[in-house]
Image (cartoon, rainbow, N blue to C red; front, side):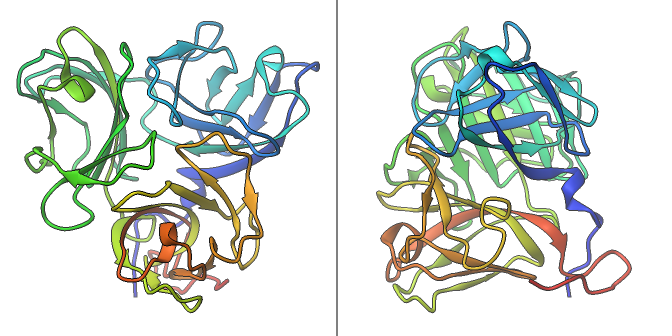
Length: 342
């Protein structure tokens, strides 16, 4: 039975569905918390995966990066403001006549300087939920950076803001060593030269993707929190009666990646409000939302998720896959009371 310190995960993460307001008025949306990280994707047609955060800044000169390419940071005014209870969309910058999903995470609000590492960073950290955003300027020499969390991150997503460089996903989810892959493409994971991160710092090496001299970077850092989030791995069986993955919570969102060549698969509980969950995106592609595929699907359960598809990218025979999952509700709350099943 999984106990938790987070009885209501929806005040730290949510998937939010909305319609385009292009041609209308700027509109504020109440999601119940301040979303310091917003990942925006149009559903009904092809479109970029646009990532915004409170540390790099939003507004008329807001900063955006796209998970589906390796471009340097650009300017985009879509997010007019990040508010204490949600966010405001700039109508003139919105998608035109489309349905949209915004995945939203709470960090720690305004960033503060962190000098724990050899490189000083600016960090917004939600230590309760195991998530932080860190920005820093590279040195070109082996270095480490403070992340603001109280436990070592298990997954680190880093993007060069000032150069055309692949997104790097470093993770210890496959095994005790660190592996690295590219969020912006389908390439296989490989062994990483990262030294294991600690409760206060993460390592950035000296290469261009994470630490080129005088280049600005952003990192999104996460570790598992009992009853709220889980970063781990599972082995596929190529069967519609697929692998069950225990997380200790009712699942709201998952990101999956096979350790060989395959797309990054995304599911959530708002686009698929009942089982089977078969509305998906590829995080590394601009494709419109996929739906109804019998080979790319799963069930969201009260204590985890179960793979139902047979596609190589989610459940190939003996394939090793990593996942990052967030909760709709804990399986058992902090008082030891079981929560609702799905």
